[in-house]
Image (cartoon, rainbow, N blue to C red):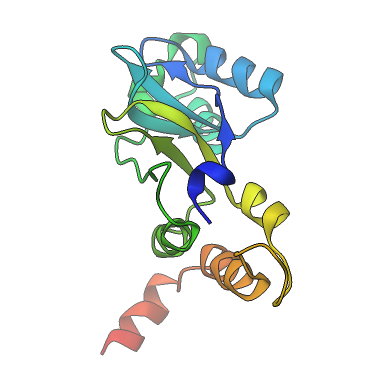
Amino acid sequence: MKVKEVMTPDASAIWITESLADAAKEMWEKDCGVLPIIKDGRKVVGIITDRDICMATAMRDRNPSSISVEEVMNATVYAAAPEEDIEQALQKMREHKIRRLPVLNAEGELEGILSLNDIVLKAKEPGGKQQIDYANVVHTYQAICQHPLPMKTAAVTAT
């Protein structure tokens, strides 16, 4: 199954010049927890989550309307292509511990969003018609949800 068959097309996005207040309003109105950040048409240059907004506002002790999304955005964007196989997208989600991938065309422009929610809703038990099986979805979700080891434990384990 291809990403384009599962993704949410026409995903919401926010311009790089807008504020955290603008991003929060867009997320509230569109009932989403992530926004790709765009410039120059619909070229994706970053991503911001509702958690990013909360943490940035609290840590800066500033009004969200005075903080630009560019200040807070994650400029490392893991994405999928519309023609990419869902299995590849699930692998990216597991590897990078993320629940959503912007779907970009060859020019880097936003085509949609692929979320773990989209995938779960299309998953079928083994033997079902769909090509996404429960085991792969659960494996991906487990990888995303796995807590990192505390620093002390990680140091001891590494030696």
